[in-house]
Length: 370
Image (cartoon, rainbow, N blue to C red; front, side):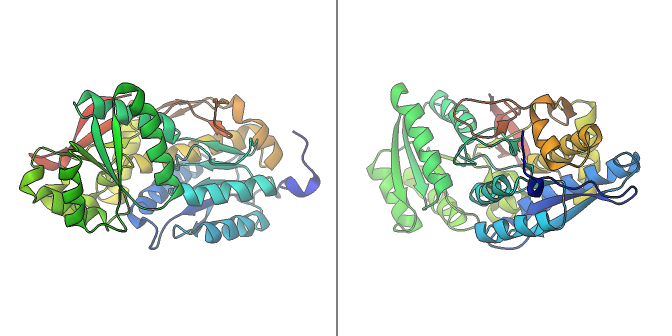
């Protein structure tokens, strides 16, 4: 890769820290709980790298910036972090925010390993500077659609709000379900009160409702309204984007939080590394770690391996994406060029459809594995 001098991160003096910029939603309207788990994984891995001697004797430093789910704020943070001399960027949970960060990183020639955002079109054009750990939305949501069909649902309503991410999800569902006999009925959550959503579900004879809306609202109000409507006693509620993964979901909904299937990116059983990291994350978070925390840990594991092997020169790091072979918490991580995806992609992280057990909402049940 030929990069002009302005694109190449200068090697720092011996003994100074190697810096990684971290983009994380830490304040509303960002999903703060997801950001907290992502940051816990990033920080745990950085601490372990430094406990093992750092990067060739130099400490690894995480420079954190709060994106607050704001694409413009994220783009400005990328500019700032590039000026601070970070070797690479890590993080971000929200897809639309990660897309803005990826575009800016590509323009500046700054390697960006996206931890959690799944939007297929993370960049508008192919780039050598960006790689991603989570499965693309099309991969995960097709697995979810297969689960919904396999559970006997062919008339599927989606309560949705305007967003590039939600619109992409609806398109994936329609394209995958229609050839298999499924129908997707779109309900505008802006125009319909929760009670009106229930009326539409009855009128359209829907047997499943997927929540493609923000949390806590309007998701919490819709779930409560549907659960209390006797006409909808047999309807399945689903949340493919993963809202029920976090404790805040259970706290907000109580018993209503259970039996709402969602996507998460964990294997059926963790290996020795994953088990050790799970224990450490649980101690750090004072609760069970979400898959997002594992994504944060794996992000630093990959970047640390690249920094040890190729130094902190930005162009050399980006050139090495296809040579990555790192044992992560959820399996071996390698990046490749995947059709329809413009960034270097781990194809694929383990993917499950799970829900909270009605008998014990703090416990998860695996319903389907991709």
